[in-house]
Amino acid sequence: MEISSEQSKCILFVLTSFRGEYEYDLYLKNDYGTGGFTQWYYFKVQNTRKNHTYRFNIVNLMKPDSTYTNGMRPLLYSVKEAESNGIGWYRDGYNISYY
Image 1 (cartoon, rainbow, N blue to C red):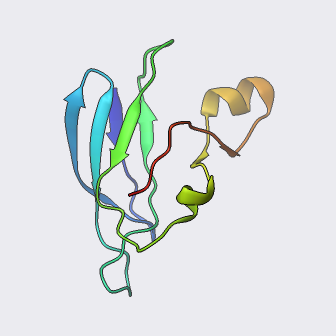
Image 2: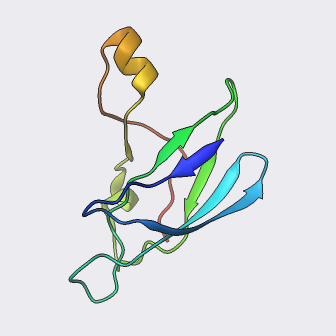
């Protein structure tokens, strides 16, 4: 599996560490123009295995509160879903924690 980020106004990952067979810790750069908070991120995942659950721990999201605590889920885009079913961006994920 490959994880990468693209340079834009979004946060770039400083480090990705492998925690287990399907679990990764992702570390973010601070948002521009903030007091050191991290809120925005973008990354791409490739070469995954079918029928496996992947876990991404964004370790240093630093804000006093987040809409994730109120049930928001990350926004995802699947090239495969877009090509085969016409599904573009959608919210997905489960067991989402913010602390």
